[in-house]
Length: 330
View 1: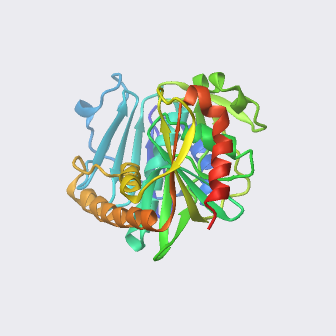
View 2: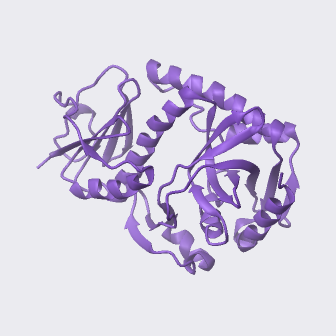
């Protein structure tokens, strides 16, 4: 039997269709880090069947109304999400075998997108694909390509004197001409089972771990954040550069000419070509702001590139980050 759940979070309408009450329970656990409990809300309009567009097993019987501005994302054969920026609404449609953890990650991501899109309209805010932590009142931003070890490194650092702010999307606000604040965007850390097996130093950390099925792999969900993290002034930026051919582990200051492209490459939401017009215009505004914020960061702060081979050097990366932290203090 298909069921529908609807609630409000940060003024955003969220709808979940499917017989999956457990997903709401898991989402509520995640959203406590937003300090905003799920509240019942009126039903989102659900009326017109779009079975010809639904790519799951027959019998899923998923229905929804296509509204102006709907941006549809086929996640995989078990899930589709519909994001409507102007109406501040999210709908997630699930087949019976959609992984609970994957559904929570998708919902958390699109809810966070809408919340922080509002922030971006209100001030100088840029979203970076990276991890953020703080120590002794100073924030540090870890940028790098996928599989550069940002999540694993931030998890390791969280047990070494650093407090966790985010590990996937890091939001930086320009509060003055040369001053920046990292806003917390916390969710439970997720590390693939295969990665945990390869890195025993991660397994030894004293945090409770839960092994769950996610989209395409099994992951450990880990929660090192107590209490809810606070924002921190950004003082350090590190670009993680994982190179299999790197002869040695090294950390070198980057020139402004080299640092700016690295920061721009880490900005979230740079591709807007596939968005509906209403969402696209909002994203373009955010990107212009983000470019300005990234440029100001390069002009105001030291940016360090760390070059390494992640298989050989991962265990030494915390010491390198500590050295950068000490030598680039304002």
